[in-house]
Length: 126
Image 1 (cartoon, rainbow, N blue to C red):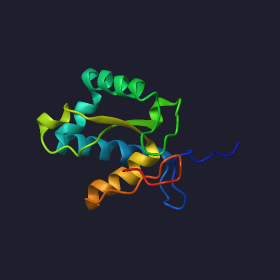
Image 2: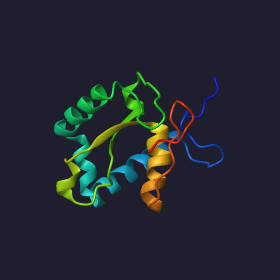
Image 3: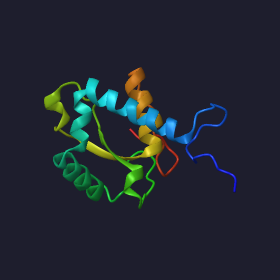
Image 4: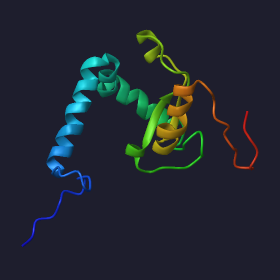
C-alpha cells in the first residue's frame, strides 16, 4: 500500500502535511501572543455576540447577499475597523461570507478605500 500525502500538504514544498499544519498552528499561536485582541474571538462573550448577529442577519452576507447554512463560512464583521480595545465590543456589526470578508473587506481596511457594492438590481448601493 502506498502512502498518500496529507490533503493539506502543499505540492512541491517537500514538507509533509503534518509539517504544514504544525507551521500554521505555530503561526496562529504567534499571532495570538503578539496581537492580544485575537484571543477575544475565542471568548464565550464573542461567540454569543457573533451568533446573535448571524441570526439577526438571517445567515446572509450583507455584501453579496449570499445565504450560507455553514456558519463556519460566515464572519461577524466590525463595520468600522477596530481602533481601540474598547471599540472591539461596540457595534455596529454585520454578517459577511468568508469570500467577502477575506477579499473585499480586508482590502478596504488595508487601502482605506471602500469598494463599490452592487445590489441585487445591478446598481451600486450607497
